Image (cartoon, rainbow, N blue to C red; front, side):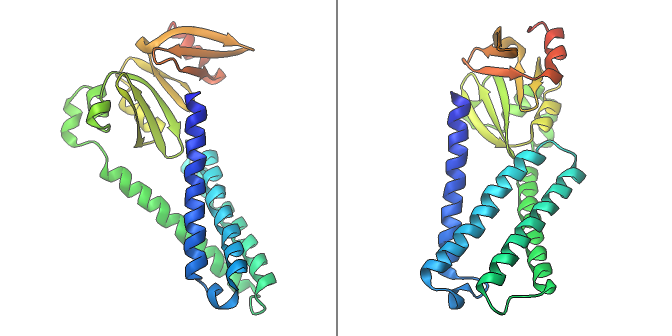
Length: 243
């Protein structure tokens, strides 16, 4: 249930971003669209472009999450190419003076630049919110919990990857932090817990029982959440005595 609510919230946020971006571009009319298109066609044009950009990027983020950087770069480059091609075709249909390979290359360069700026901003935010050096002298869980608001800092129950963010669930509630799951697992390697799925880490003492439903394994936690155990992690979970 909690995963469904988070998924719904995620898509609502994306819809909000799409609506705001569409409204902004439709009113401002960048790249000459304000003069070339009437209000309704201009709104429709930017609604299509921003929809492909926002929702396409969300899909690419999921596909590239926790993959090697060079693979992620290839996928993002492919996405930039597809987005540029679709925009080029649409522009060629709408604007009589929009033709030629040079304009397609220009579009691709703009898309790549935007992707680099967004990823650079995310990287800077991660660096800004990285734990302080003195935190290394603390025990790993206490140092990790410094990332959370004061009222959410308690014994860890589980972690869940959500795109660029990490949903951290403790005995005092949950909070989203800008962190990759693999970085969190590394920071918590001395804590009594383990990764059970490509998107989930659990504290061992938070596991209350094991369920097997239609051939799939789940761990029930003290929070009431049922966390899936993937095949690739099942042996480690079994060795830990949780299955």
